[in-house]
Each structure stands twice: as structure tokens, then as C-alpha cells.
Length: 366
Image (cartoon, rainbow, N blue to C red; front, side):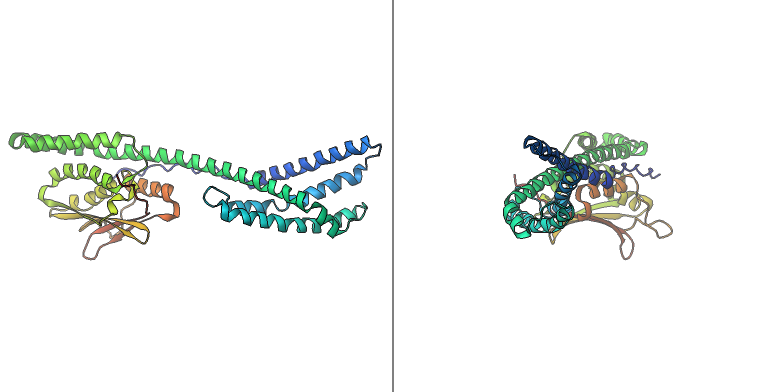
């Protein structure tokens, strides 16, 4: 019986744009009020009265005409981040945009300033006098925006790592549960018992494979491992089921040169091979073949697991995702986002092929 699909992880907490932009508006307002208070104190020290009715609207206008460019700088920070690898290319873009914002800011601000009945200030003179200091203010905004974006990305990476760790733990438990099914242990131990009377060496090897498989399943490893290590883990599983199916099962490997260095999600092949066996060879009397292939294609790793007669139910439909396939889909999406693909396709003449396409990441040579 196919186990029920694993419960999906809860989605990440949605962002609240109204709260985010409302907080930014409050920051700009607070800055305007602080500067208004500073100006009022200076006027008092000079023995002058404070025209609050004009001072506060003027200061608010001055700062709000800077605030309107905040979304522009957030867009730039996300599209052209100033980081260690790209700062020499992206920093000039930010500085050029900041320089363009200064004349636009005063084109917005001065008409309102004049409309408040304050002394007229010629546009050219104001721009010449304040260009440098206003540019510095915009550069400070750029720094603040990048700090907010770095913190946001750090939080997202931290949350994604936590979800991925939970899914990897679930994958280890799923694999262990599948291998500890009563019929699996019964068949394995029965095979050991049978071999013990006629081939002690083979029986001992079967027990060693079972022990190695269980230890490897429970061992804490990175999220990605070289394909050669994943194939070694798969070999333990294949060696055990080979004793069950005997000559009925033939497993072939078609690994292109160099593909063995590619990094793949740990415990990703065994569920696919198990799915091929459960819905292929295990449901018929004749012999069958499972082929595991890997090749580098256009900057990606193309993996496939193919069985020559299985995968479709009696109505000709694909089986629903079980624990193994469903968990594999979720982990691929978490690891690679839109850069990955998993597809099931029927084979002419009978059979099923599961295709995986992963971004190419290779392990460093030993």
C-alpha cells in the first residue's frame, strides 16, 4: 500500500506592504519634525518668533519630496545590489540616479515652498547651493535601503534554511520508514536466512548492505552531495532488493563522464528507483530493467530514472505523488526554485521515465 503524502510545510509568513511603507513614512515624518524643532530652537536663540504654521508644512514638504524617491532606491537595491562581487558596476548606477533625483526634488519642492508664502528662492541658485548636501542625503538613503534589503534577504535565507532542514529531516525519516516496512525487513531477513545455508558470504554481504543503508540514512549530511556519493548510497539499496528480485531485476547506469561530480540533493535517487520498482517489476512476473542516467546539458544536470514496464495504473494514469516523489518535488523547489524541473513521462511500448533537471553545481576535485 502506498503511504499517504507527507504534509507540506506551512508557507512563509506573508509580507505586509502597508506596514512596511507606513513605517518608512513615519521615519521620514519624524525626520521632518526633528528638523522643524531644530529650526525653531535656532530661531528662538536669534530672538525671532517661530512661524509654526509655515515652518512645519515647509519642512514636511522638504523631506517628503525626498521620501517619494524611496521606492526607486528599493527597486535599484533589488535590481542592482551593491555587494562584494558587483559593487564596481552597480555603485555608479546608484550615484547617477541620486544625482538625477536632486533637480527633480527641487522642481517638486520649490513651488510648494513659494505657495506657503515663504520668500521666493530661484531654482538655479537653490540647486547650485544645495546639490552636494542633497546628494549626500540621497546617498545616506541608499545606504539605509541596502541595510534593510540585506536584513530582509538574511531573514529569508534563514527561514528557507530552516524549512529545508525540516524537509531533509523528513526525507531521512521517509526513507527509513520505507526501508523498515515489515515486508521489506521480512524479505531481507528471509533472504539472509536462505543464503546462510548455502552462501554465508552472500548473506553476510546482504546484512552489511542493510546496515550501511540504515547508517547512511540516519547520518547528518549536507543538503547536496556529489552524484557519485548518491550513487554509492543507491547501490546499497539496489544490492538489497536485488536479492528479492534476483534475475528479474537488472539495474543499469548511464553516467556521462564528469557528471559524477555534479551536486544533487541527498536521498533523491533512492525514492525514484523505489517508485519504479513498486509500480513496475513488483507488479509483474517477468524480468525488468531500471536505468539511471545522468548527463550535463546546457549548464544543467539532466537526471532520469527509467523502468521498462511500470508507473501507469490500470486506467493509464500516472500514480499520485507518494512520500518519496512528493518530498522530492518539495525539496527540489526549496533548493533551486524555478531552476529545477521534475517530470513523469510514459515510454513507448510501456514504462515510465522520471526526469530531473537541476542547475549545474560541481564538487571541487579531491
